[in-house]
Image 1: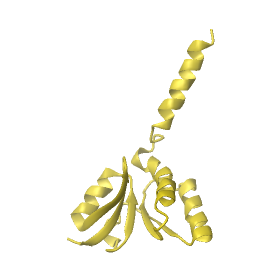
Image 2: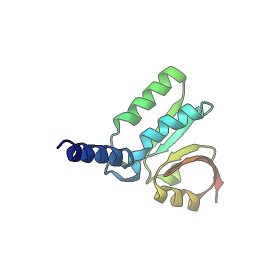
Image 3: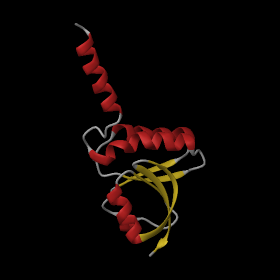
Length: 125
């Protein structure tokens, strides 16, 4: 009697753990940002390419890392890639942004956890 509803709830929870929450690739940005900064503590300045509008988790990370660890997180619109400069460490989770970056910059991949990547922008092409 309880097995079928329980199984349905468990399947839904498992499916939601591996989802983009219905907002596309930008749904992974906040989780990846936190994981990256824990794994790569030497990163002092990161530019996050994000176009999903307001994201409370990203805003939390931005202020927390600035005040507690003196790290600078900049949230940058993914549509303004040409305004980025060589030497910037850039975080993205959208394959479309990676294609745009590859067309404008030579890049070096610093970290990857599908679908997200952290790239160092080397020089303009």
